[in-house]
Image (cartoon, rainbow, N blue to C red):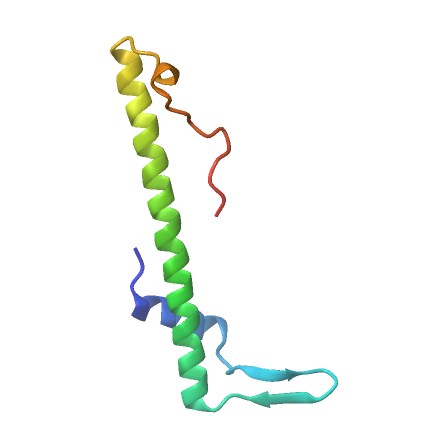
Length: 92
């Protein structure tokens, strides 16, 4: 898992020339250094939160699959116990 500091470095590398706010109609303004750092940190935390949520969902899905495998190996029908495994893979 990526650390916050590592993710901040990744996002800085993606945005090496700073960040601009505004639009085509009114023009753009470059963010000040402190605003740039705050925005990068916010984005980094958001990405980490998304990664953690995905990892948790994958872990739960794998645990369900493992439980079904164990029950099946014991000759128990998982559906008879109400276990339902989602057919759709997780989206990233």
